[in-house]
Image (cartoon, rainbow, N blue to C red; front, side, top):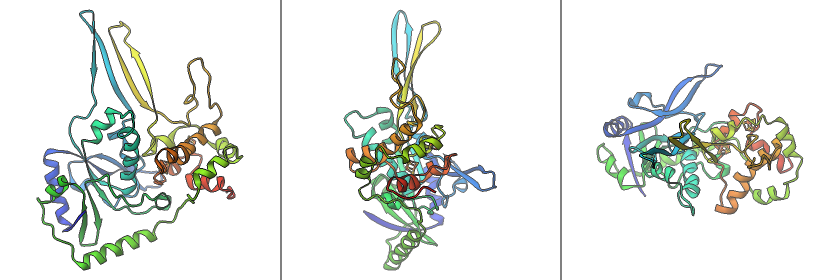
Length: 348
Ligand code: SF4
Ligand code: SF4
């Protein structure tokens, strides 16, 4: 690990050097909510001043750039009585992510375990993932994030460089030689002892701002024990089965594949669409049988995948504690309250 510091104005120079030959995605303000508060999202940016580096959690994660909601997997057409098949991994050029928070970097690391390093890697994800350069930045903790409980409030890998705001300067942690070489284009220096002290103070100040939490001790075991608990019925009864929670989640990756054939039978395509286990037909199979027809069984499934099944497979939860699902849920269902109720806490 290599550490450097640089003056704040140098970040703009770095952005402009990177933007000369690359597409850059960063957090920007995209609108206002009903109370007039800004809404932030990841978008392609070419002007440094559009990027809001002290952004709170975005409504949607950056997932659409490496796990798009809808993607053509293959197309077929008949030419001269022969089928022509074409596959496009949809990864045209490198993409630079400028300012991802630790939770979203950790979400990528978790997705990698399934979509990159498992027995059947997904080439569409791999092609995009290997074409990414990531600049992480420390977050501004929000009242709904419980990433500290999930151990995802800091990222140890999965990025190229990670910057921390020290007031007049940025402290940068460099993990890759690409980042090291990019940084040669701006003025940086070795951090001194006083910079280390400033860094530790910034980390301590940030830690004090995390308020939401969940108790994760023995959680996988407790979920096993409480599989038949009435609390699932409670949450299922208020769930609208809208699927928003999966849509906004940086780690939900379940999808369905649809095949369509043109009306003249001369072409066809396979399309992948992200799906949500809360939707009514998620567990419906050929013949019409639905393995999880009730809302509470589907909602329960989502929690068991995140906090039970993934833990068994990879020894870590699939939830990074970003809190987006709870913030977007129209029924007010959020992870800390659901988990507390499963552990015997009172439902408010
Ligand atoms: S938990 Fe909330 S966001 Fe998720 S499906 Fe139910 S109502 Fe929709
Ligand atoms: S389950 Fe909710 S809190 Fe956990 S990673 Fe997904 S959106 Fe974030």
